[in-house]
Length: 307
Image (cartoon, rainbow, N blue to C red; front, top):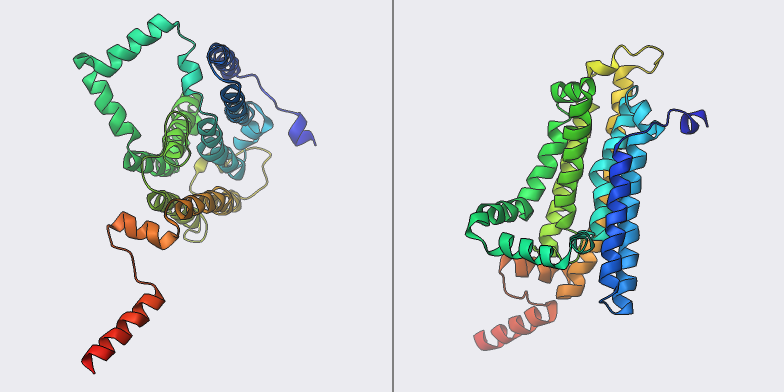
């Protein structure tokens, strides 16, 4: 119980989260004044996902989880799972984009929107936005960020430098996570741009990379990669055993997010095309495959003609 009660800390990021929630509530209030009751209820329902994501992010960085992550590698992996997968997933499901835009006065909001959307001077920003939000960019960024911060030298740098740890490592986890989950979860007014078969490929490839990373840190090596955990006073857990536990968490927790998400995407594909095979055919540009009955009928017809 002491592990849960002690070592909570105050992080200035709590103030940022409180401000975000307050601004979001202002936006919801302004939208409710001009919306139908069912739309108001829908936005309120989504807002709980958004607030849940923010709350999980705060708990991850101020709770004893963050404190013990400095002593134990496997705890650090739990922290990474939260920041890369579950926090961005909840925020994207919460779709805070429109309420946050309505925080601005209507005149200022329209001027900014017209300028950014139509001005030739902001064409570079529109091009950058399209590039960053492209599904392939999101997939590559997500996996590159995950692998990059587990390179021993980069991991050690983050452990030794608080600013790098909080703003670069954790920040890149959350931002790349948002881009990744926007390709899988509808987040009003944005929707995934690629078909479910592509989304399945994103899930399976990312899960495979997590598995390979976990294998590399456990069964494909015989030593600890991270000198940070080699000489911590009071820690009796062997650094390599600690690393193997962290790898197991990456391995197992990969299934916690991948399998449920994969089931949802498969169901989405079946609802869209009637079957998973038809979804694959549509993506590959192939015509509809013959059923067994059609194949037998065509074979019998061919036999009659040849006879």
